[in-house]
Amino acid sequence: MATDPAPASRPHTGRRRNPAVREAVLRRAADLLAGPDGMAVTIDAIARAAGVSKHTIYRWWPSKGAVLLEAVVEHAQQEVPVPDTGVLAADLSTFLSGTFLAVERAGDLFRALAAEALRDTAAAEGMRAFIAARRERLRALLIQGRDRGELPAGIDLELTMDQIYGLMWYRLLIARTPLTAGLAAQLTQAVIGGARPHAPGPPAPIPATSRDDPGDVL
Image (cartoon, rainbow, N blue to C red; front, side):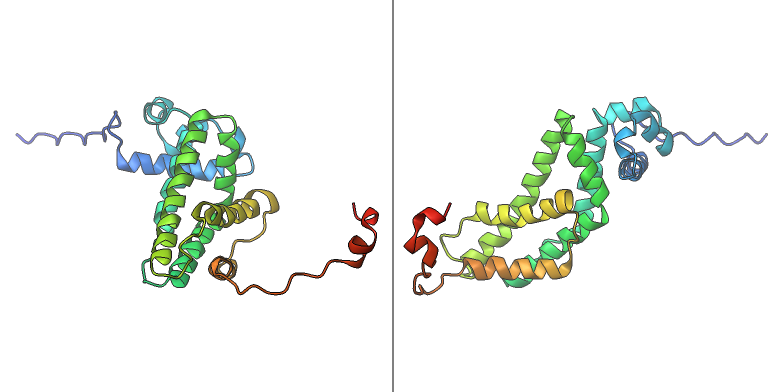
């Protein structure tokens, strides 16, 4: 006598993350949190959208901010290349173009993460770790260029990275102006050109007002 086949077992969603469930949660969380009402999204809403229980999400992530952070990290890892052509100008321009493109595509998601980090300690710590990891990749490119003589031996790497990422975060969070491949190329030229030593020139002339009447200059 034939027997009915055993029902397919449900994928395990215990402490070991099921890849399909994880992907669904991160994708739906990114969609919801990047929307106009993103900051009002709850774990319940993410669970409903992903088709999982709230308990499953809390088992894998401690907070909404942690879910959002992992979605951002996942996005960045997939989008941003780390080239090594042996030429700093090409490598840096490609790296910055990829970084800017990824940020542009997920701008609302990054802004939501920045806002969530203000209220969620775990999200703030994770965001700092994420930014530090991106800086380390940029640092590696700059060190390679320095070691090849494309940058001065005494270049301040921390200041250079502050200038690069400071521009990016300012445009993303404050000005909300585009981050384009053209901007990446301009920034690359500014970094490499500005780091090269320049021949000293004559001192700038002192304005007549400050030379003749110091009291007029405040």
